[in-house]
Image (cartoon, rainbow, N blue to C red; front, side, top):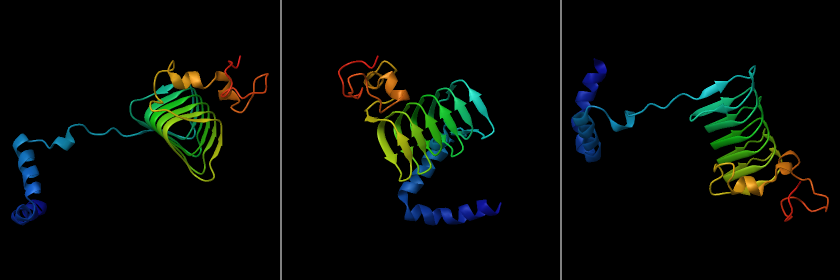
Length: 183
């Protein structure tokens, strides 16, 4: 009851000072529901540090992993916690790595924090690597790093480069620069 009285008392003053605010209030009042409340955002999923999953994880939402995953992870926003280990491919719009990743990482925005340990190739649109992060592999920029597996990023990174990114073929030439396949 107190807040309603307060709103009624301040409404004339706020309408006089801000016409745009009044127009927004009027539009919301006429439709009955403000447009910003059309769909509530889902809570991020949290996988705790005592959890081990052997298999793939797919979500269209946000996920924070603190445990161990042996499989591929696909998400909108993926946060790899400091205690987490992921052994598999990661594909997400936005990836923040605080823990350990062994495998290829694909993302529109990729961030490796100071505590990150990544062994594998990173295919990204934008990347940030903080001082102290440990990374062994290759980095490749693509406009669409989340394209399907038969797209250019997969063809540009030989399967042998994922396990041993700095290896060479029999001729002594690194796989990424030779015209030969790594098999």
